[in-house]
Image (tube, rainbow, N blue to C red; front, side, top):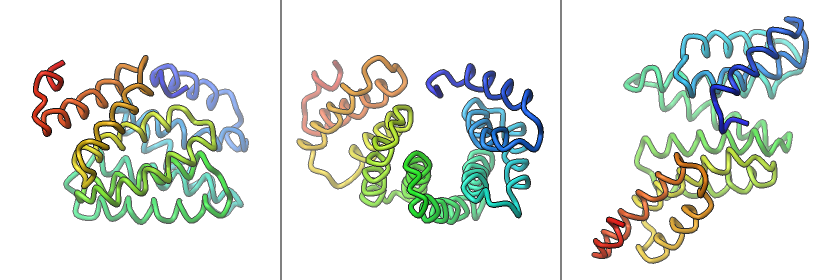
Length: 212
């Protein structure tokens, strides 16, 4: 589970080291390993792994693996160089291509991840209504895939855009409180949802509830 990212890194590193270099199962694990390495800040190693995945999948029928690795390379580039002129646009291009590929293959888990990254592009451009639409699509596909980690991430992003987007405060509070309940037991996502609820309560002048 990516809920324990360092453990996931150890598990994936061990699995990829034990498999033959040209094994399909190893190639399929590389994008996931690159993603979790990015999450823990090992950006150089993540770039190495994701580049290997792209190169290994080049010229093969593994379009899904190559597409996923290219998407995660674009995410990594934006993290490593947030001020890069084309960073957000490169991520948008990679995410839109990934959405097209995974819609065609009906890969719900990969599609949810691609939509989550496309939503992040909208976040960087303060397009909160568009972000919300994309996240709701992503959440539906994550649910179809049974990917609870992706659902938790998308709900946290949905809480953020609910605070800043055009939704009136009353339904926004109801949504964020629902997200907060879904996040119980996960301190990271629970804290995000709690902060969004506090901000919305403050917007309607309920400062005691906001502080609580």
